[in-house]
Length: 91
Image 1 (cartoon, rainbow, N blue to C red):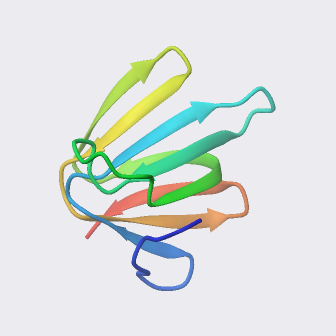
Image 2: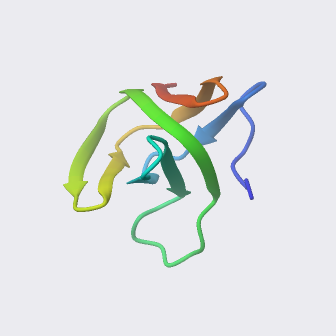
């Protein structure tokens, strides 16, 4: 399931108010769920498995018992670095 607009090969656009919910798994991976807007009550726009290794865009991070939430503050791109690693870059 990925309804995010493409921003090139293995990259997707994130709106300014996107939220990425990162759940840590027992096997060392992470489960990333992307929402277009944290305030909107809509289903997620994408879900991917891998590790979010870096966020190079304006954001806030909030730790949770099962992982963390990344609240984007600018338009950005979610990019796949390799099979298991993701990065968020500013536009």
